[in-house]
Image (cartoon, rainbow, N blue to C red; front, side):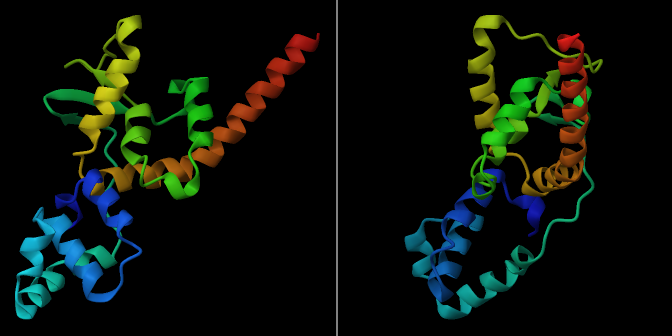
Length: 182
């Protein structure tokens, strides 16, 4: 087992049990990762729990996958935003509103916001005006099942790029303000 087997939803559940300590935390981790009821894990012998804990040692390391910018999920093709030209103002506004401590909780929403559906030729699929919100919510829900290692690879790429995006945006806005004042 490794990070590729863990979904964003499972990562969010793992983050939600940080207040537990010791054996109780390990029992909850096993239940989340193995998708078992907590009662089933609590009925395991100590030897079984120790074997399962050993299998979860990968949780102590960060994923190391390379980022993919085009992917297929639930028979739909998507492309992730990789440069500022593809971003709209609402992307920046919404990213600013997500607090640092809410990143894991909102990871599926961040990926849904920074991606768009493409056809087999890689062209952006147009969404009817009245269905934008519904499409976004559906994508958010679908993206909870994306691999955690996939999400981490893109998040690492984007976090490295984000300061440059902000600088480019600031320069652009200064130029626009200058043009407006003339």
